[in-house]
Picture 1 (tube, rainbow, N blue to C red):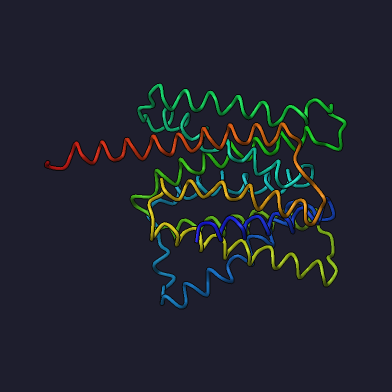
Picture 2: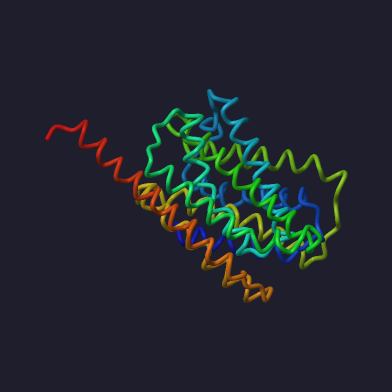
Amino acid sequence: LKVSATLIFMVMAAIARSFGDTFPVGQVVFFRSLFAFVPIGIVMLHAGMRLTELRTRAPWAHARRATSGVLAMFTYFSSLMYLPIADVTAISFTSPLIVVVLAALVLGETVRAYRWSAVGVGFVGVLIMVSPHFGEGFSAAGASTGVVLAFANAFLVAFTMIFIRMMASSEPALVIAFYFQLTCTLVSALTLPFAWVAPTAGELLLLVALGILGGVGQLLMTNSYRFAEASTLANFDYAAMIWAILLGWLFFGELPAAAVYAGAVIVITSGLFIVWRERKLGFLRKEAVEPS
């Protein structure tokens, strides 16, 4: 389920990349958010879920999570206008590293030398990844702008992860997803009177597919956590790099520079080490509270 979700999200990214700068970002986000309700709504109806079950006692928590999520979506689709899918995907792998920093600063979690070292090594990999783009200069088809947007997306995704972690104990996953999609739809709809490009029939079909794929991917990812621990599933996030390279080469003839491959390996290794360390600490905490 998790690997399928990564593939679907990358297909969605490929569709967005194919638009280039044809459509305003707000319009792309609008279709991505609105039509994601199609698969989500079908699942809700099939499960017999009532609208009353979407009530929440934490509206401000949802607003905070939705705000960071909306901004993350805008920066993500914007970065795809400037960078190949594989480059954006590689930079997105910095989010787990940023989460470690935020967990220490915001949540007050104890982060020891092992994880701090992994974060430091990971950010060295990040510098290696982005070096070709900044080396080309700021006039290289907006590549540097794309790098800035991709990093902004990684930071916003990290904040979103922290906000979801703070809400997870009191709010169901489907409720969190519903209010996020609703906020994205409403905010992006506000941009339409100011920036709208009439799509052709084929482009309209792709825009609708973009949203449906996003909803399906979200459902697959959410359901994957029913069958395995988060620390286990985190390892499979990196399958996205395989799909990104394959789709970028297949549809756009884009292959990452050698520095991107090298940096991505370092970042992924650091991320996997953090996942392993989190898992080990989880076992130690469990042994500490359970009778022998």
